[in-house]
Image (cartoon, rainbow, N blue to C red; front, side):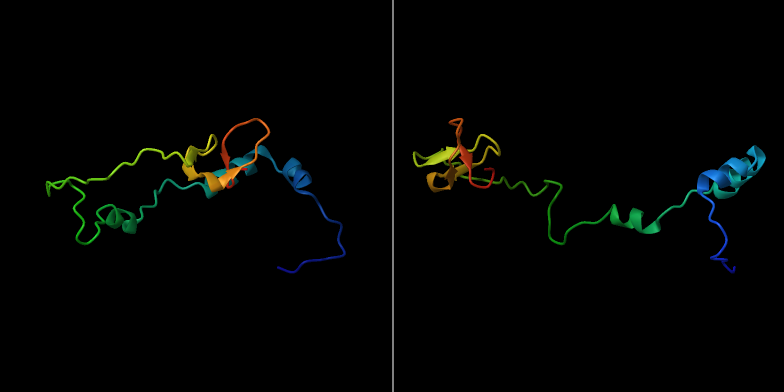
Length: 103
């Protein structure tokens, strides 16, 4: 379609105002479809398992993690709630313990 660049431009509001209600309803019905798109790849990815991974818990193995309490040279950040070494402590005017990442 050729475009006449010398012609005055019309805004979308002017075009919509000129369209009749029947034309707008017809356009809406043309653009809507009753067909639902189904992605076949999505159903295949639902059954994805890592090779060698026992995610079902049937192996009977318990994970053991050694929990070490907070040391005297560590602090808990009041923003991110992570335990950091005292060297990561940032200055705060309110007296709160904040790490350098959160400051």
